Length: 414
Ligand code: AMP
Image (cartoon, rainbow, N blue to C red; front, side, top):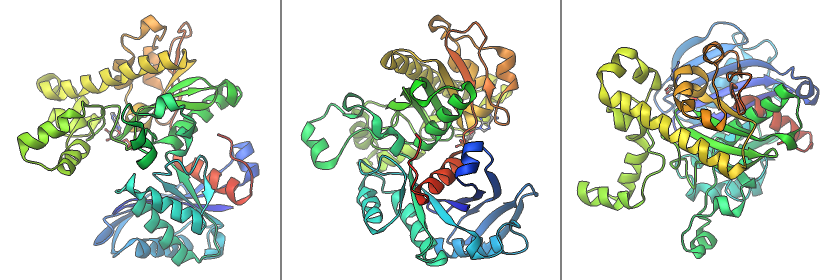
């Protein structure tokens, strides 16, 4: 089956077309037929497209909305420039959508019908920035591909629905949880689940024996404790703002700070929330950039105290969470790094692990240098009691596979 994977954001659509079926899932022989991004939808869109292993092609086109972008993508995919396996609309067999918030409704990926769509709409108040744009993507795909084509929703939150009450409840009046479902949900679930799955493949172990701490460090960052294959705690909360320091998000802060800033700076609570989401984290501390690559530039870090501080606070918070999650999980076999920073920066991995030798985590400097985005692998010493790995994430592949499983009526392996 050829699966179109769609990740629809407010003005950007990322997509891939992946050939996969139950047999290729079992044999790990899925094939990526195409990938691309359409940015700045609503004006002169910037389009990057790649069929198979050919070079990426960049172009621009006026695309007024999500539907126009999906139409454009279908026209390209079925043209001579698109992948040879896709000649007409009939060569796309199903669509898998990344949906950010599934609330307490969804513990697994599901085929989208009217009830599912309504439940995703119910979650809009929990993710007002993300769910509406995900819904737009679903509706646009239905209009362009026809209502007969199966569409599947894969939720960022679903993997973390196994969190026990003690991990997901905030210590606020319980009726607020009852009334509004205010609790910790967690995000990046597809990524945490994928790297835990790759780890057990690598080690040849059963899902039920998978005990790891996974760190997704990209522009957004989160950490998960996985015990017996299930997520038992994670750092993001009701929204993706809680937890680790991120590119532009603060992560954990004292909630009293919100009112304090609001009074001092004359901002509404909503404006303070925007400040915590968009102007904080690495960008906020450094005053320079949210991009870890730029902060790590040796000359910059040596000469700019705040660039150095931003990296230090980032790594300190990650180390603190690793320790906490090891405590609540009763230990783990391995710590796994993934995401743009986790995969590409041996320096950040080394700084996070520095000082964890006492719990038995000893990085191997050469292995740490050698492995990264292209080749994941073991980065700790053979003598290390707690192993460390880099495992490149592939959320799109997992979305395509879940889509196949859902439309084939096969239970998903988490
Ligand atoms: P993601 O959100 O997973 O795509 O990650 C994007 C982030 O990864 C960027 O904002 C960079 O901060 C970071 N990144 C990418 N490459 C590197 C690198 N070589 N060193 C440090 N950080 C990197």
